[in-house]
Image (tube, rainbow, N blue to C red; front, side):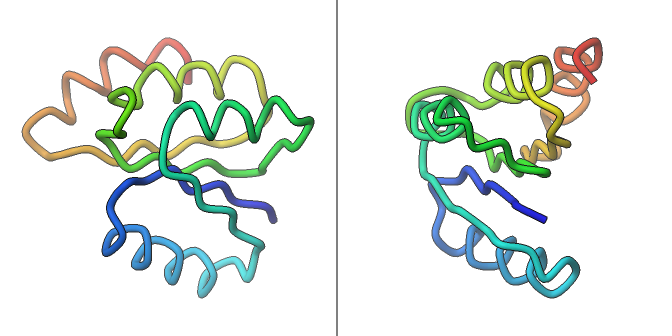
Length: 96
């Protein structure tokens, strides 16, 4: 399993990476911005799973999650603060 982690926060990134490796044993690639994630995916590298820890330095991340969901076969996990989770969920629900 190939996993792409998109996150600007080192402590969260490390925790997510450890959890993913423990559960899947998959190969992880970590990028720190939405633009890096788009470049990674446009290089014909399609991950099986993308984990986006919002907000990102160049965008919030919900647009990125929609783009990935609509243009790849990857599963997408979008991590955001509890106080905005419901609003974000509604904005991305139609894209899976």
